[in-house]
Length: 149
Image 1 (spheres, one colour):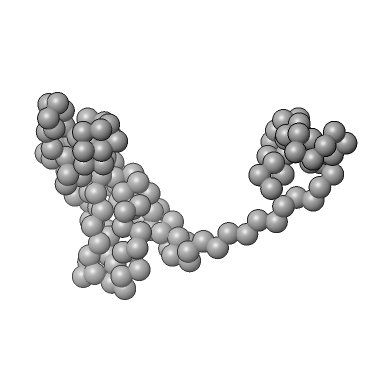
Image 2 (cartoon, one colour):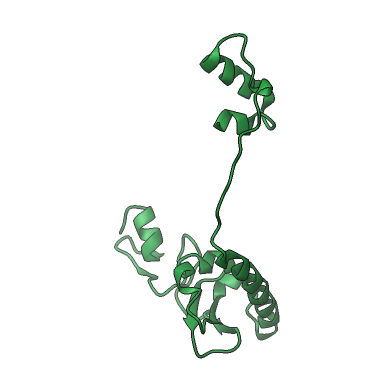
């Protein structure tokens, strides 16, 4: 199945791999394209719209001196709790250091985090950034990635 998906992109390599698996007279190009279905969480559509709104708010925050989105934290309204399952992915999706969900908030709020410590590896300013045993400033995630966690 994977070979069939690669065939339009790498036709010769995919055909060679197919022949190695199915014999010299076989060709991946004589097969039907595999049927692929993916059930994405319906909440992603709303997240992508929210991402556009956060990007607009970050653009407006440049007037306050927040040029780098990683120098920002974002509070987003979440009255129905639908964003909670995505909380771990939201900072990366929005390109910011921190995201907080607030059920009472009605607008997107950008927080200036330039006075907070910054991870020397990811440049994020999350709550876990601290000086490590080697003297560097790393978040818990990055300290674990480099073997200091």
